[in-house]
Length: 128
Image: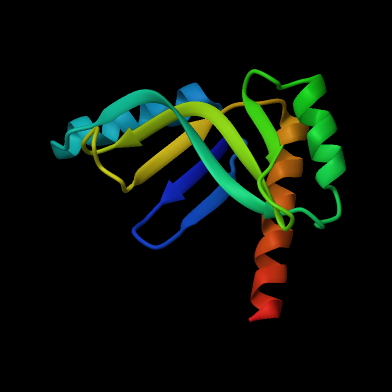
């Protein structure tokens, strides 16, 4: 599964070998034990990747062939593509901008997307 953690200033993408159902179940149990409210709802998450990142064409093919109902890749402008994922938003309040987005695709697509995101982070750090 892929887990995107959103904060006030950024987000972090993680690839987890744990099943989506097991992770959500553990998160619900934790919220119950600590007395925290929890909102789980279907949602989408989007982020940008550089259009010239090696592997973008492969990601487009993976999105079209196997996971088209979960992932959409489209050209944003001359420098970036937008990756949109369908999954679930989990936060302490439904209107909260801070939270976690989780989704499940084929292992190959998840791993590849996570690798591309990591490479984009490295490129961003180098350009600073």
